[in-house]
Amino acid sequence: MMNVFRWWWGILLAFSLLAVLRVFLPLPFSNEIIIFSIYTMGCSFLLGRVGFISFGQPAYLATGAYATAFYLYYFGTNPYIGILIGILAGVLISLIVGPLFVRLRSDYFALVNLALAVIIFYMMQKVLASITKGDNGLWFLTNIASTPILDLSRPNHFYIFAFLVALAIWAFYKYLNDTLFGACCLASKINEDKVKFLGYSNFKIRLLAFVIANTTTALAGSMYAVYLGFVSPEMTSAHRAADPVVVTILGGVGTLYGPIVGAIAYTGMKDLISGLIGNWELFIGFLLVFIMLAGEKGIWGTLEPLLKKALFRKNVFKPER
Image (cartoon, rainbow, N blue to C red; front, top):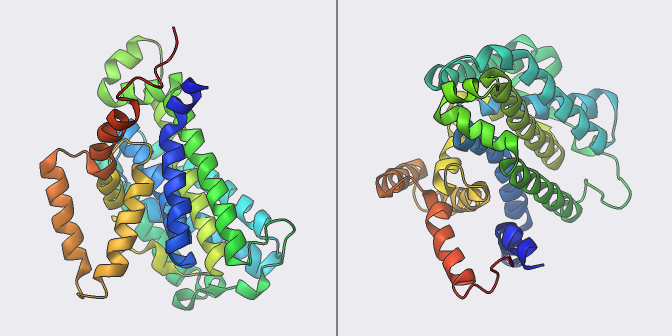
C-alpha cells in the first residue's frame, strides 16, 4: 500500500489541487486549465523524453478540433463519437507526417512543425473556407446532443469528464515513463549510437513517441471543440505556436506534473495580468528568462524535491525490503 502511494503521490497531489481549486475558481477557468494541461502533455513528453521541441502543436490541436467539429456540424450530434473521430484524425496525421519529421534534428523538427501549423492555418482559413466557414468558424454548440451519465453539453458534467480524461492520460504517461519504451526514448535523446548498438531503432522509438504525443494534443483539440461548441483557424495561428512550449518550460521540462502546474500558472497569470496591463506576454517572457537562469527546472521541478522531502523525510513511506 505504501509503495502504491509512493508511486502515485504526485498524481494524487496534482488532482487534489485541481479539486480544491474548483471550489474557489470559476468553472470555465477550471475547464480551460484541464484541457490546456492535456494539450501541453504531448509537448512536454516530446521535449523532455525525446528531445524534440515542437512549435507545431497547434496543427495537431486543430486537426482534432476540426475533425470533431466537422462531425458535429455536418454529420452527427454525439460528442463522444466526435471526440473519438478527433483522436483518430490525430493518429492519422501523425502517421502521415511523422516518418518524415522524426528523421530531422531538433531544430529542423521545430521548424517543419511550425510550417505545418501555418499550412493548416491557411487551409482552414482560405483553401477549405467553403467547409470551415473561414474566419467565422464553425458554430455547433446547439448541435451537441445530451448524453446519459455525463452530459457533455453541461459545463459541470464536462468538468467531471475532462477531470477523468486528464487523470487517465497522466496515469498513462506515468506508466509510459517507467516502461522500457520510456527509457528508450530518453536514451535516444541522450545517445543515439548506444541505442542503435543495443539493437533498438531510433526511428521507430521517435515515431511512436511522436504519434502518442500528437494524439494527446488532438484529443485536447477535440475536447476544446466540444466544450466551446466552436472552432476557428485562430487556434492554429502562428502566434499561438509557442504556448505549449512556454507552459512546458514554466511547469518544468520533462516532469510529469509540470503541464498542470504550468497550465495553472500560465492561464492564471494571463487572466490576472491582462486585466492590469495590455502586454501581459512581456511579464511571461521575463518570468521564463528568470526560470531558465535559475536552472531550467520550472515551477514543479523546483517544488518537487521539497515536497518529496517533506512527505518522506521520516521514511514513513519507505518500501519494505
